[in-house]
Image 1: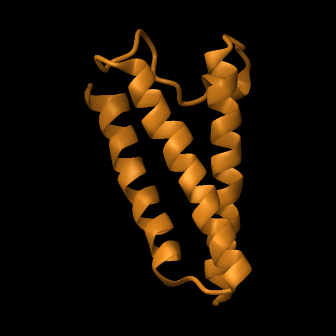
Image 2: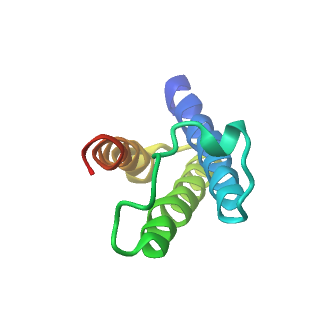
Image 3: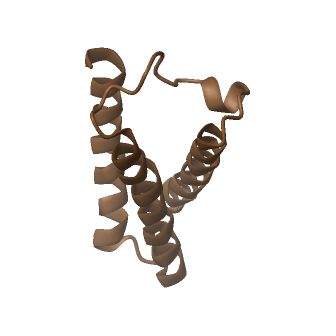
Length: 102
């Protein structure tokens, strides 16, 4: 595994853990810098906000952590590592659409 691949997987794990922590704090109504940064203002913009939150945050971040840990344990980037890159790109586009378009 290349050095950049290991760094990428560590970044995915770190970002996913912070993102899950942020969303758990938001779900409990805690307001601080972590919970308000890059949060979309106003009411939820989708018809089923609970479903969107579960799918968008907990499932995707959980799989990112799981895939990254598996790749690091195997010391092989492979298809799981590539899937973390694809999910990050897709998530970025979805967030931009959600934040700026909806």
